[in-house]
Length: 301
Length: 285
Image 1: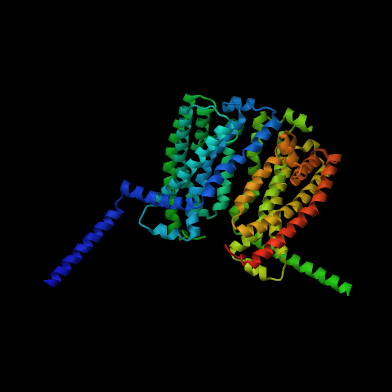
Image 2 (image 1 turned 60 degrees about the vertical axis):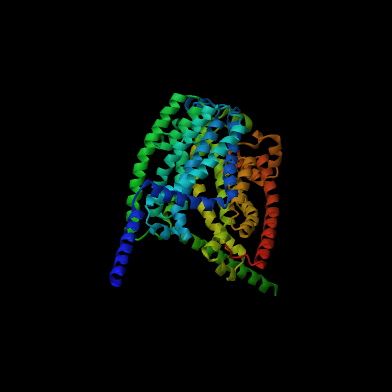
């Protein structure tokens, strides 16, 4: 009788464990979002320990803008450029560059933040532990992108408000709201770019060099400082296929040029290209992660 | 007796140089293990110049600026801007290289071994700086070749050699500026943010992409105390216009500033390093 009871209890425990395992492994939106938020919160807790860093990255990139004003004064002697007016929708080149700088923060964040997060886990010695937990790799990447999203949304909004005050921009509430929509859509593009970038980091292991190379190349190919029309056609078209480029186009169309229809067209193109980049990014990441694990190079330095 | 002392000094210097060269060789060997980084440093000088040059060209809608011509007597925006940027690239990479020369050894875990070896701290810094200098020089040669092609109609070897003197003095000046920064990084460990902030502020009063005359009067007055101002303007003027009274004046000013900056740099470094060793902060992360 006693043996039977023990056996029954054992069976029940096994069933219970199996059920727990099944529940834990069951893919659901609730489980996934819990994992994503937990990982994002862990990253944010780390970042929040360095509050000075938030203020620093809010202010210092704005300092890099000032030489552009002096350069314009030296080369043009005026605050309006006819080339920018013809191809950029506004002659006010400084505001053009200022908005470009704000939006480039998002691209920078995809490169230096989300894309490098896995490498930083590797360096902290926590990578293998996170990797063997029963959660999807994609959820991890989404978590790291999500923490970047919070941080970069803060930086972009603060910079926008500072520049709005300094440059006396006269934007309406609708223009500001539309700019925020552009920032959010560009941030969604950030996720997909992070997937591709994280895959490259897993292969080459040189985040510093790769990040710099990507950063500097995107600085050339995206309309951060100048309209893409000035680039040779083959370079211009590389810029045109990147979803980020349309973020730059639409934010300027909504704010500086006040051409709302054009802005919405750019925004739609950006959404479509971001969706394509999402699918491609996910596939590339999954394939490369599988390959890296197969050849035993996952934790290698 | 004097001759013996002299011989010992020469031998000492020789061994210091051997030590510095060994560190230089080691740094290149490490670099060679990262082919992607090597490739990046080969092409980065061009990539780094491009966005700035394209922006200059977009501003004026071409290559020539009448306003720039009326200010300095020269209107080619591409040559003007790139000469400033070449100098700044050398300044930036050697400054960061020298500043992080000892900190990088600390992070690699090799600092203690180097510190107990019978060579001076300056040889450790020199070896690392030579590595960053050669790396920057590769970039500089690529950049200057491109500028030489743009400027081929009026290019003069004499002017080029004269401007190289400014590059050399500029490099030595950077060493003087970097020595206190090494001590700062040693003390603060992650002091790069403050250095970057300082570099960003200096860029306002350094004529990299614009002449100083376009600055507001207050900034123009502050810029008079910035030695980089004379180095960069001397370099550009010598390259574009050759020998002139202005170039000679800049050269003289730099030759006066150089020993002063180096002495202050060495004194601060010496003092700070001694303090840090006393507090046992060396080798801490």
